[in-house]
Image (cartoon, rainbow, N blue to C red):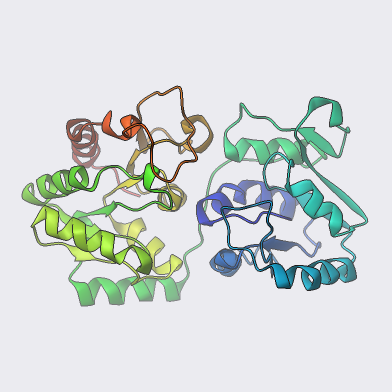
Amino acid sequence: MFRALNLGDMLCAIPALRALRRQLPEARITLVGLESATPVLRHFRAYLDELVIFPGDPAFPEQPVHGDALPGFYRDMRERAFDLVLQLHGSGQQSNDIVRAMEPAQWAGFVPATEQAVPGRFLPWPDHLHEIHRYLALLAHIGVDAEDDGLELPISASDHAEGDALASRLGLDLDRTVFIHPGARLASRRWPLKRYAEVAGALADAGWQIAITGSKGEAPLAQRLKAAMDRPCVDLCGETSLGGLASLLQRGRLLVCNDTGISHVAASVHLPSVVIASGSDVARWAPLDTQRHTVLHTPMACRPCAYDECPVGHPCALGVEVGHVMAEAVRRLNSGERP
């Protein structure tokens, strides 16, 4: 399976992977993906046997490219002589050439144009479908039926032990913890930090404990948020593994975040969330479970946006007011919803 994408994208492919394993319980399933997918392999050993690191390709400029590793990568792919490779990396406009170069016995996936479709192998890119349903549609096209479209993230005893240790060390009271995640890979996908600070401060004043989440690289962003909200909070940036974070989220009360990977982690462990979607394609990426998750966004003709910095003043983010987010957060917290 070729899918060289980051955490949230990988989690959205799990329903398809689950269906594939149910259909082919004895198959050896290899994920060809990014090094950042290593935690996915650890948590989904029931579905995946191996991860082969894709070194990047100039066709994907948004990812690091280790060009000197490409010849060896393709040589390894050819030597493995895969019986089947599934292309689960977008419409195929760039990725089909990569899969073709692996020289598998057979391959299937998406194609960008209707006239390129082949029954049982190549499906025209279903631009209108949610990301999860796109890959289930591809599996149905090749004869693999799915039983459900739900996300999941198995949490082990060691994950819970990590979460317990962190909660104890940092003084987290998970029964009243609201997680705030101000980061996203692109600056254009981040709701303004000042507004996050207002939301976090108001929730803290109402008696909720605020925990800021993020990667180690997002620590400076967390520091700015802490300074702006000027209330006690817990900084989890860079402190958790994926499993440790999932353990904490599963026992918390609410997540307020941008449309980024952690929103899919929350959906996977059934933590209620308020997601502020700035610039992203809401129809493609919003959590399917609307009973637990609220997505706030401003409709714009320029969505979806691939700019790192918005060139027109970020109206998609500014259209979501602090009051909108607070109203949804308070509604969900008062409802008593729990994972």
